[in-house]
Length: 128
Image 1 (cartoon, rainbow, N blue to C red):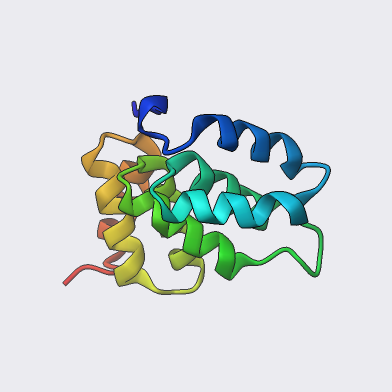
Image 2 (image 1 turned 30 degrees about the vertical axis):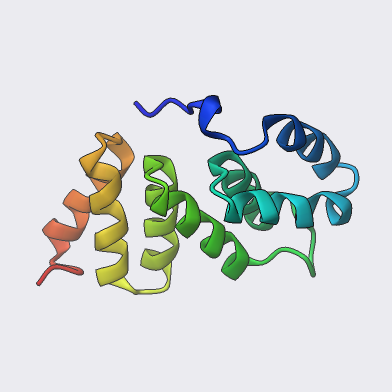
């Protein structure tokens, strides 16, 4: 199981402050979280993905933005983000991209990604 290493966060105090603001004042928190995520903050990327996927109300709910931030966390090696990214690609019938995302999560031992990867193999989806 992947455990977040908080020492790798570029600015933990700022991250905490922005996260506290996210629920009540997202428009104040989002720019700062985006900046931190671009600087390598895994937690910021995950907070942004979750916000755009689950917390934002229409018209701010944005699956493309969620996908972008899951992809960032995926690049940082976070297996749960690889899984979520794979699910989004799968729902869009982008099986090759789903296969790649699930594979990265499976390499880290994330069981849901392993299961989804096995289903792709079983169905012959996204494999070469």
